[in-house]
Image (cartoon, rainbow, N blue to C red; front, side, top):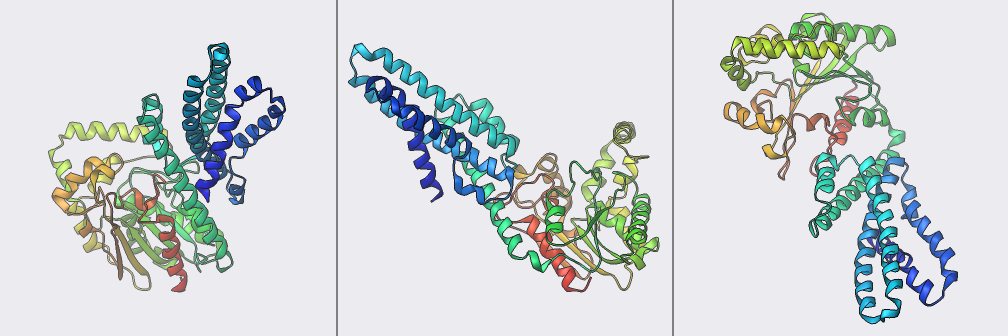
Length: 441
């Protein structure tokens, strides 16, 4: 049905774009007004049925994909039409044919620009890759058609996927399946900060909130030792409990944030304020590749990197970042010592999540580079942490999917907002938090 409407729009667009010859040669001037109105409507509302989607971004995006599809259909018909016309007309109306061809090119060009601007400005899944391919190879015959079809496919799938998520969330809205007894505290990993403008957790927090969750953030600095980060998280937990009278929080912590949270719970008295700890791709047993890098790097190089990092993140808002202390605490030796000295506390539900990146090429920078190094030392991994390092607590979930991509250290927190066909990261967190609710947490 969707493609049928696009084809109909393409045929209408073809008739409108090529109406100049009919109007001038056959004197059908009455066609001008209805064709002009149709042309405006197609450009503004390529498919009225898409208005059932609530998101303005998605409406604009799918409208752009519809326009591009109609542009392809209309362009193909226009080329055939003008080829035939050129061989049928006499020399007396050659000028009319030329003007008609120019008119069609201009009108179709406007539709194309309208469509491509829409999808470029609204699509998340196009990423940099397709945008660059479109700009750089958009003038290469045949190749540009392949790229355009890919852009239409990617954006159409994106909108269909998001629309289905809208429907699911509306159907279960009354259930509030993520409305846990205690609020959720999201704790980020190393080298990142919590930001209102660019969420470390991608689209996950909003999905949880839509399904009833109350969400807070750790707001700790990007790179400190585990003990220092643990103190900041402990302070944050106490603030939340004091300000909201919630009693406790459910912590979901990614990467090094899992170690920081364990320290806050076990060594800083936060066990009385924490109902559960879920660690996501946390290196509980360290990273052997981190040991390797620290061993081969010279002291001067390490100090130089640390100085630049610390100064950069001070400018971004960290009070006193400590790059080297943060990295050293992720080594195999430090993590093993940490596990001996930081036992779990009774009365808290501990669980862990891990994931596997299947192919380095599918990982975003720098995970596509580090993947092979980690694989050499730690085996199967997410681009940074080996699978053997993930498990902690009474329950452990290891996420593996079919296909070339897998789920990387960044994908598991939706950092790049990429839809993985085999793994719906937002729904995974909804079910994760729903399970906490069912456990009475």
